[in-house]
Image 1 (cartoon, helix red, strand yellow):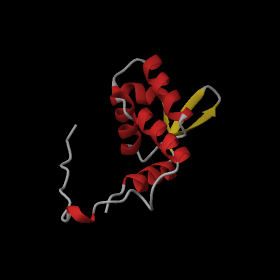
Image 2 (tube, rainbow, N blue to C red):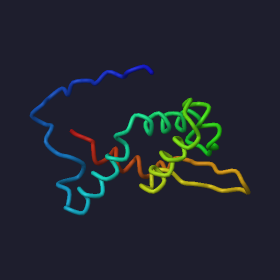
Image 3 (cartoon, rainbow, N blue to C red):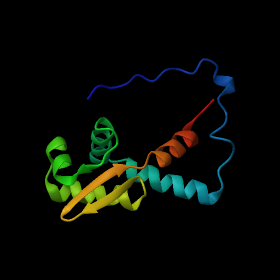
Length: 115
């Protein structure tokens, strides 16, 4: 996996706000929960594979092949991502697919925006 370089901020005196202002207790708790779910290397690999394929939908078996992990392991992590609201699960007969919920990632990006 290629690593991306972090770019330094041009003026450190202007970096003082997260998003549009201070987070409420409820917002801080909600975002901390989401970031905890994202703080797992396997889940980040799964998300990167979903993003690479156009944000889904992609089947569990396809993801299992792409990340080279067992089906139970992939299913466990997909469940955690889905329960957190980061993915949407679709069932068609015996086939289960997952897709990224881009609106939630846009929200997280806004929370992290500094500048």
